[in-house]
Length: 228
Image 1 (cartoon, one colour):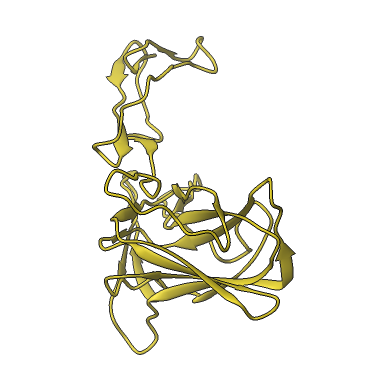
Image 2 (spheres, rainbow, N blue to C red; image 1 turned 30 degrees about the vertical axis):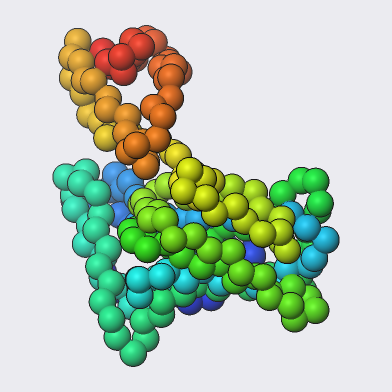
């Protein structure tokens, strides 16, 4: 499938705008399961300003919007998105906040936008423009990865403050966990051990608690082993 990922998205409270989180489905029957092809980034901002727009730009010329080709599979494999440099390709994505979103000094406001799965190998820059036309820049030189069907959540930041930037500062490292399987077809009385990976890989591995929503269908022990 050929798709076009917009370089500008519209702000929606606590979510994505319609049309910005693309999905794909392919089936040889009438049973169709949609899969996300994109990931996302969530910025948490504090302050007294009213935000008009936010732009995210990779520091290593990563393509973040424009023409893309999506390959989908019938055998439950993950869809693959490919983006190449072209006249329509953009190395940034902008979130248009319309009339403006007023920030609070105590509680952070979430701004979420979709991005293709990408390794931002040299970090990225966030440029925030407020209702007075003033701009605020927050950036990191550390690598971050946007994964398909996952949201990269940045630490809360107050506009106008100077971010910490020490060698031991891991504020820009995003720690999240994802499973090697998000769905499976299993026969009765069989088992599978789920693998939970974290990013970045050198982060402290969390203590996990596994549970089943219906043990008459499948049980799971505290090693992640599912038994039907």
